[in-house]
Image 1 (cartoon, one colour):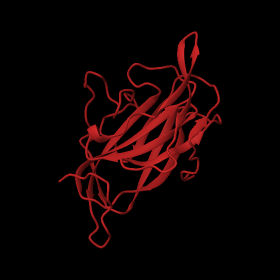
Image 2: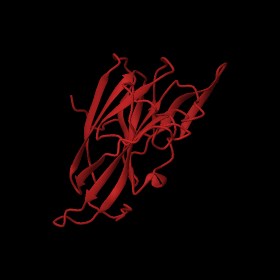
Image 3: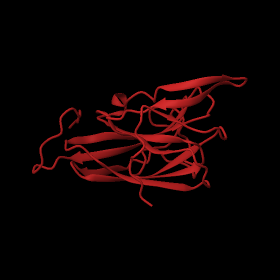
Image 4: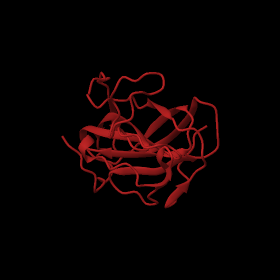
Length: 201
């Protein structure tokens, strides 16, 4: 089932559940070699490990500017939350993790809600994607298509993140898990160029 972004609100309020979560980025091919649960994925902006030992996939996905790119992720361990997709000329241009409201517990701060931009602007492509609080079996697939801006970018970074509610703070990644893919975007000369997106040759 293909699900398109419909849950766009200033905040998404979600229900308590377990405090661990993982997702596997299936399409496009991620920049890192991942295990079956999508690990390693905690450090921002693109997962991996803090000491940088995760091998790279060395895959760059070619994309025509102005077309739809298929996004497919598997939530390998269920957790309530939502996803966000961003695009930048390189990882340094990716946005900060979502602003999170927390509550204090005996185990430290736990996430309650996250700010979602109703009208995302570069570098965010879509926010509040796949927002959910219902429980489902591990291995659930989320899919959608997102329009890639009509720009030239030899090696742009596409970021897909999962924000989680009722999750303890993780020093490596806060309340968010991260994956990235590298895209080679070629602008369609028949279409107007999109403004505000920083491509690179």
